[in-house]
Length: 429
Ligand SMILES: N[C@@H](CCOP(=O)(O)O)C(=O)O
Image: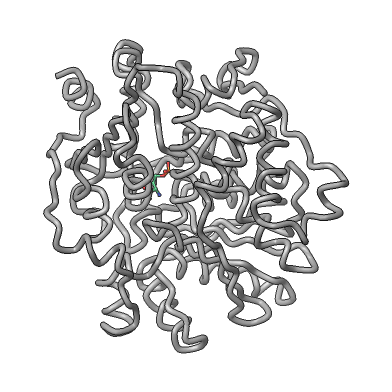
């Protein structure tokens, strides 16, 4: 199994290099050389398989032997040991709850799988790894949790000061040990730019054995395919997936699943006002720009990393992309209104990101009223107690113990200017 860089398609690397190097030196993104469709035997039995067996079939087909059978099975079973239920609101609206992992966000799927794959890849090496990650809210906490106490690994998380929720911040800053949080005086885009610049500085990348836990790393997308299979197999007809989106790794994972044969009627990208992809879908013009802060902060991304992979999967054909992917964007007032509406209509407490998804499902259903939509609920509402409390009352959501226990832990972070050189200097010091 080999991977190419989107900027230099004829340079191929193996799985280990794609994962550990994470970002190619030419600043492209790694893509699988071939995406092999699942065979008839799989489709005959996929609906009755255990999650573990189905997951193994999907991942092993994609990876083509890059990880031996028993090791891959262990990685999958150990990493993905929590459920992803699809909850029915009514015939048109379903919610795929991706917040049942340790940090209450869909990022647990990718981070936990990645931590185990990296441990497997480096099992015979003594070189310590530095896992660099930029977060707008959820990735950082999931990566911190997945790599906490992993020997030979230090995790460095960059996050935009004042632009993540209080509990999200605790998930990044309170664990200590091998986890360090850098509090950047800037936006998520600044953090992401700083991380990418460190990777492109070959000396720094080599000296510190840098690897990325963001969705620029192809391993993040592999387990994220699995919940689309899990949810879709519960329906008789191909569903519409509505995907709250920031860096667009989640949507790209579904596109890879579709390339393996998963039948999906449409992908609906739901964004807040950081809407460069819905704008591209409407106008064929891609205009990345600085993000603005919103209530759905994990989606505050102005230059989505995975847009490059989306273009690649559609052969740079805007028309082809619009046949499969639709996009809608909503502001904070609409998000608040949707949280109340979902609560009043269904008695369901949805978080601000899921609320943006709900609005997009409504927009889609206006023109396609017979469709079945599945909205990805990417984070637990308890991660946003301020907004949920303001809209639905203080008792609308109980904070699970694994989050509540962080509330009184001290925040430990290192302030940093939003400059790539500041990160490089800090790493070198
Ligand atoms: N939405 C993310 C931003 C980083 O995205 P990723 O897909 O590269 O991890 C977050 O919650 O941090």
